[in-house]
Length: 281
Image (tube, rainbow, N blue to C red; front, top):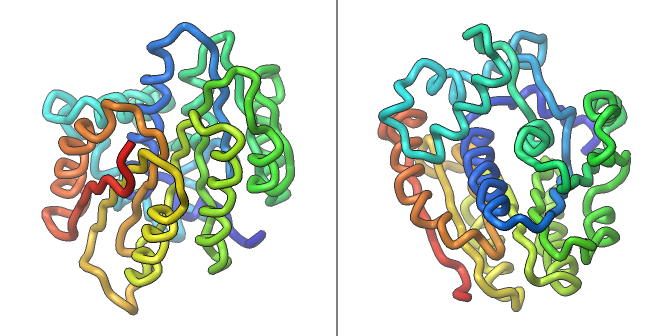
């Protein structure tokens, strides 16, 4: 698990989907003046260069942000427009060289009375994360297991929260750990928005993952998935998805526009997308 570095994957198709949804959720939370907390269980470094050795080695950003960088914003769904605006804010000279992690996106959106709790276990990733947010007193970084951290910060004092759970899934038990962690956090605070990312590698594993959420006892669970290629047993990650507990009521409708657009632009019309209400409200 500690060998994983998100820099290898920064800006890929999975990041595009994840960050479109995250931005939509954070924007929704701002519609009320009352404060909220953003919790990131696997924060990574917080910022990535698309020109360093890790990004250059895999060039995964070419499956994601690079394909969208020069697209006409007027042709995009609103959620993708908002996402691309953030990337342009980070690269104001017009050259795509930096890609934000989820914590940076959160910092760019949180208000003065909101705050964040960021967890990262990998020592090098944490050092970069801590340095990035050292001057922001509203953002507390901790080098520790994010699953444990999530359990301890629930319920939040604000009684409003968006939690992003984005593990590497290098450890196969992460699928079970994710469901158990969300259930435990939800038991303490059932009004929070929980966004859980997952890779599409083995369809049987994803089917079980879905069933575990359906059987969890939690209500109001939405699934959104984007695959660049058809399911296969030997080609690695073909797509990714998000399970969202207590999604903003606007999210499903937004995804009905966002997912087909991303399939056309990122998968070039191949692959597939789907939205499924796993559990009703």
